[in-house]
Image (spheres, rainbow, N blue to C red):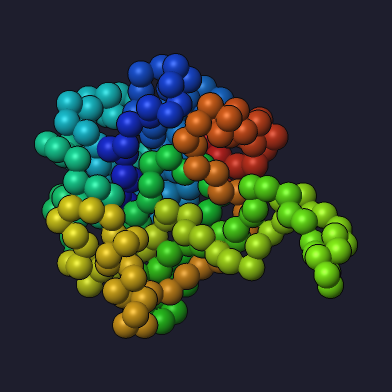
Length: 234
């Protein structure tokens, strides 16, 4: 089994906390963020990981992610292609056709990739995506008749699901990825309209590391043992 990690994004919003590294290589508890993703992928049987990265970053990724039990194959983009374009470009380096895991390089999550693959194989859609419940970033005010305030809820869970940025892509999905742009705005909506997209509900840890605040929370989650079952590192 192979996987593609999208690691071409810069770490501008992380500022000095990134220490000049790409987001996927930002250190969390002494290990690169992508190392936790690779550990989870290895548990699902992945032995080869394509890393879609910016031009000139191949050696940095080889050095930082070596020794994790998988073959690391950096695939440089001569110019930014967007997430969908980056996936399509990296997919040209796949060893063989068929299903492939794909994920954003800035996600810390305890996703069971074997379960994601199992869900995909149940019905054989073009792609299967991991989705997480949407948590409100704000407290909400509950209103009753005549706009009487009846209560408050601090950051409640909302009745919606959001993409975790982790997928299984089949051959059709790979063929329909855009040359440039974002697959979640093009390919996935098209597949959904055709009934060819499925989801796996993920109720565990999911954190996108975009800001210094996110990085601090990621450090806290790892320190608290959030990855003791999936994606753990010794």
